[in-house]
Length: 522
Image 1 (cartoon, helix red, strand yellow):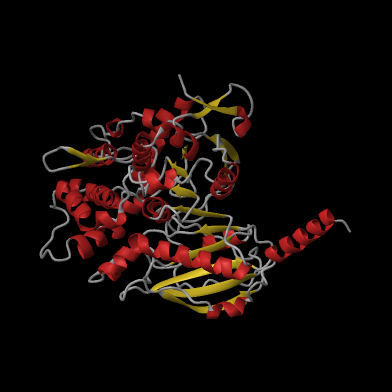
Image 2: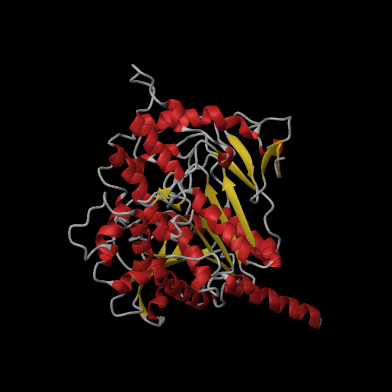
């Protein structure tokens, strides 16, 4: 055997060893030392055998994922304590075979409080090593009571828990496989989207590529907006339930569906939709199939955005077309619990006799920012270090998201775009808006697309995505516990880098992505 053959054979053996998770047996990881933390267990889970231990189902912003297709893996559980008041539970899942050499971090929904096993299983089934955390507390994600008197736990939730989990997870990956990940990525929506932006801002070395979908950022502004939308029915003494919101949504579709050149039950250009709720105003003697004066005023305020007591405009409202998900924010006797808890339990915890209905929204916004904006918010001009090291950021948002206004993401993107040098924003930043897509998934339009595969290809090849193909499942979910909707026809669309949009070519099946091209509409 010549020297060249010896080198080739040696390299092949080395590559095989690197790909085999025998560098450290799974159970042996219990003895691996972590800084400010301990590994509490490490065990092999057989293929398809995982059962989620959490008592809570996936919260808004965290999609469900079956475990039947999850391959055998090493499940590592750890407790991280970066402060005396920290109690961060995190897990790392390591494929026993076929690891692709990459790591993916998974985020949370709303106030967190549980590990997103649903999303971990999806990443593991694609041969990624993956990790997630409860961010330092246990709960259903709807309230912030866990942070009362525990400022360090709020910091853990705001940014620290994801970082220390990421550092520990990559150390465990290297110990188990004998090498560090080739690429580290973040792929999450909602609070998870905010966590991705936070990682880019505070810990730019943690990830090479980040997918931040429908990010709950700035969180303090979102809390103020959620209070505002919840106040409108109470303010005008009306109901905005499924019947009223469905009526408004149907009217929006009738007026604005065809503005993109295709009538498909989806508003493709919501920013160009000028629907006025007054068009549904009840006429004298009419009591059904119309809106009362108070309901018209409430809807107009929701679209218009948050205003102070003196009438000055403060924050953006919701885009037209996002009415169907608003019911979660408008139906209660109080605003959405996530926001109500933020103000009642944290920002105004020391204010006796606080009346949520009489507070000036200028105060809401200022007090929210003052309490914890420095912990939970990300500014668009604060990601310089991430982009300077070559980081890739994929942002996306569904236009019909009724929980987090898509306008928020658009505003953040514009601020970020203007803050970056042209070369960085062209090569390292993309925003894709999804018409007809609700919060993180679902809706009337195509809502399923591969963000993880997109950022993986981007980070691997350096070529930014020029289009993403989205599909619509034929079976729609019932939404908020409702019964499943009847089957519907499949639909595809190309999602286009903002500000371009999908334009129908004028021929071909409008249900196929191939009948559309990305461009700027004249």
